[in-house]
Image (cartoon, rainbow, N blue to C red):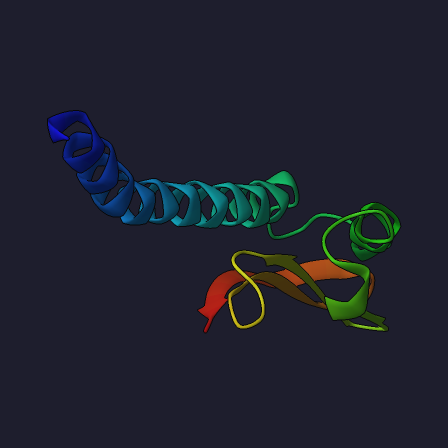
Length: 103
């Protein structure tokens, strides 16, 4: 009978701890990918290079590539967590790069 109690409490307490760990891992991975994409293209880089790389990056539903404005989102824990890397540019060059977390 004692073994059943230990198993019950192990599962009861272990499941939330494992879920919290999984959420943390997924969020950290999405943030790292978004920040790495931002770091690839510093200010002064070619905006065309950013647009080319952006076509295969992030979540396709949350990707925006316009003239002078590009944003790529990596999804953390759906449906609300988005880690976004955004760029603005003028004359074909990147003028601003930023990372934002949208929850």
